[in-house]
Each structure stands twice: as C-alpha cells, then as structure tokens.
Amino acid sequence: MGRENEFWARSEIHFQFLDPACSGLTRHSRSGFIASMRFAATAFGLFSFVLSDFSMGAVEEPKIVEKVTPLPVALSKDFEFRKTKLYFLSEKGPKRTQARQTASTLKPGGLSGNTAPAQKTLTLQDVPITFERQFRLFGAVTGLDQRQRCGDYFDFFWRAKRPVDITVRLEYRQEKLHEHVQAQEISYRNARGTRKTEFKVIGDDYFDDGRVIAWRCLLVENGRIVAENRSYMWE
Image (cartoon, rainbow, N blue to C red; front, side):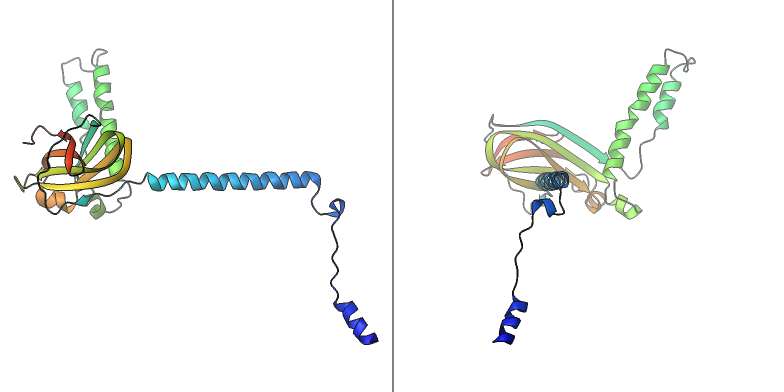
C-alpha cells in the first residue's frame, strides 16, 4: 500500500489558479493587447470587404453568339443608354508633332502671344489619347502581346430603373466581311441602376477581318429588345 500511495501521489495533477497580480499581463499590457486584437480584426474585415467588392466588380467577358437571329422590339422607358465610349487602338501611336506643326504654321507670327495659347491647347489634347493607349497596353510587354491588344473597344453605359435579368448584346459588321453580322453578349441577373458593359474586337479578329464599320448595342429582356443604341452606318 505504501508504494501504491507514493505512485498516485507522484502521478496526481495539481491545478493552480493564477492570481491576476502574478500573471504576465499587467493592466496596461492587457489593454494594449486587446487594442491590437481589435485592430487586427478590423483590418481583416476591411480586407474581406474589399476583396468581395473587387470580385463583384470584376469585368465579365462576353460570349460569342453563334447564330445571330432578329429579335422582336418592345422599347421600354425603364431602360436607356446613358453614354457610349469608342476607342481604336492602332499598331502605331498617334503623331504628337502634327498638332504642334499645325499651330506653329498658321501664320508668320506663329510664336506670338496670340497663337501660343492655341498651340498649348492642341498639345494638351494629345494627353487623353496617350493615356488611353497606355491604359489599353498595360501589361503587354512583347510585340506579340501588344499586337493582340490592337483593335476596336466599346464601352456602353446603360441604366435599368427596376431589377431585371437582362442581356447586353453588341451586333457589328467588319470591313472585310461586308454585310455579315456578328454578335457578342453579356447577361446580368437582377441588374438595377447604372451599369457599364465592355466589348472589344481585337487581336486576330481585327487583323483578319478588319475594323468594325457599323454596330448596334441592344438591351434584351425575355428575348425582346427594350433599348437600342446604334452607329449612323447601321441599317
């Protein structure tokens, strides 16, 4: 019995409650630790919100419509196009010296005070074009990468006044295909408010079939056209 009691005495686990006064965290250090934890939680929540917002705002890629068929028209005041932005990215950049030469050769006093503001204005007009080109070419390092960015870009800003499942379709003709109509489209679920939809005809599609010479953009609900925006060359 003596050896058995000695064994259990050595194997017994003793629990000891820590006195706050003897703990490693003082009142000042505990408050600093809690503040650090709150900051970390806030930063994590903000990062999660930004990540989710970025994923929701990611640009959707359009799909090619295999067979373009005519759709019935039922225009509605609940839908409208607000703005259209078109941009053509050529193989060669714009010539910046042409505007300067035009301003400086208007008349013999080209560098006088009367014509200097005009020269400055013409030069500043090149800035948005240069910026747009740099934006479209961002990330294209090699000449082959830049070649695949060349072509026509379309940005359509439209608005839906009520929640709706809607499809945005771009129908277009290219110069080498004459009257042949092609189409791209993007579908949205429960869309409402102002949206932006981007289309592009670039790379091999542009080099093989040429520039887009006519186009129209449609908002389609339940297989019917509820809003339309077209170029003056579209018939």
